[in-house]
Length: 154
Image (cartoon, rainbow, N blue to C red; front, side, top):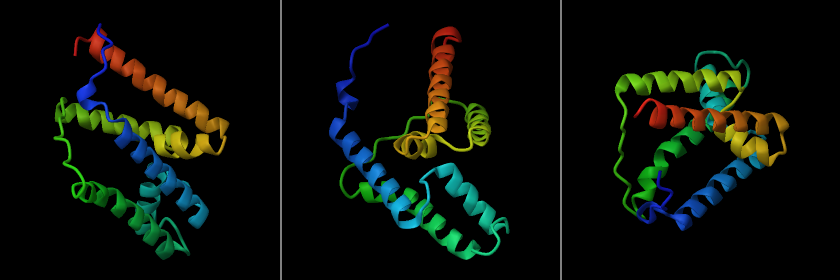
């Protein structure tokens, strides 16, 4: 097993800039709107507001959630103005992707949030529950990679 660093894909400045932008966005959302920038909660609340799950303030809830999700979709298009986007490489079958997506969805429901909500925002707020959830996410990811790449021969 080689532990050599892949310098062709080593992008510390772009990674730092991305991390700073994510941190700034999460900070602005919590300070300006009092909301946590957890993608699963934002998207879940968006669908809930669209189908009558959020009574009363549904219109206001829908507006900021739609704006946030629109920003997620717009970001790569804006980045293309600065630098080329990497070519996507998906080395998995559609069935594997569907099963993986369903497992991630179940995991976010059990954990009451996703890696962005717990890993970025929760840990920054000092939430012990978020630390535990993020450790569980990371352990599950490490175990999955180990099993798929080393035990199952993928």
